[in-house]
View 1 (cartoon, rainbow, N blue to C red):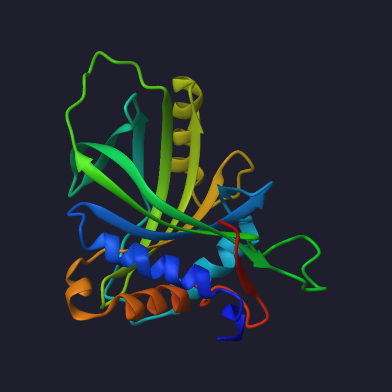
View 2 (cartoon, rainbow, N blue to C red; view 1 turned 135 degrees about the horizontal axis):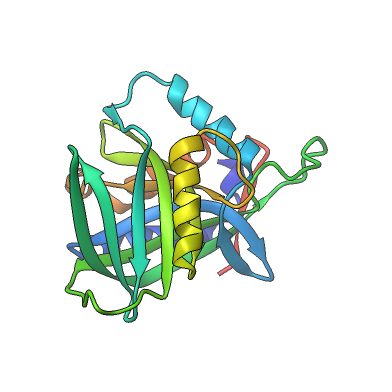
Amino acid sequence: MDNLEDWDDGKMKLINLVEQLRHHEHGELEARFGTVENGRFKAGVTVNFFKKCLSMCESFKEWSSVSDWAIRKDFFFSNSTRVSMYTENQELKTIAVQKKKIKSITNKIENNLTFDKSNVFPSGLRLSLSTENPTDYSENETPKLIRFKYTKQFFTLSGWSFDFSKTFTSDDFQNVMDSCACLERFGNEENQDFTYEIEIELQKKTYLSLHSNEHISNSLIMKIFDFLLPIHKIKLLH
């Protein structure tokens, strides 16, 4: 692919991520779009890009399954512990995990499009491997951050998911509660207080046993370019 002509080191790093994934029972391989400022990646895309990509996925009819929009409440504690609350089959679920970042690859998406004056397309791409191991937590501890996440997921037959999320994060519980109520009432409306995120993640570990590291890496890159243009190029930063 011409888009990756200068990305040989990045490709090797991604292949290595896939290899490491094989050795982590609770590992997660994912790609996120965002921006890069001073070499630092920040997740989140423009509303226009979010809506464009969401519309593409909604028009595709060959998904294995598609979830309805759903809210998840995340409470972040010390030691990288996250407690998530969500409703499944009309039953409230609570799970606690300890997240550990294994490795990430930060890339710049080169965008020299003369018509993209408002920077609709993302300027950054992060490929990452992390683990989320089940853990215990104290109900008496005060969370450091609270995040409400309004998400719709599209699942492929082979085991990938395309996740679209509108999120709001704060250390002020009441502030987050108000935003959550806004999401529940006006979820389809734009809101400048929300962060709009797009994530591509490998969901089924059985996919690892069926394909090589290079095949899986190429599959992820091809899915990323489903949302970009042929003129876009990926440049490895670190």
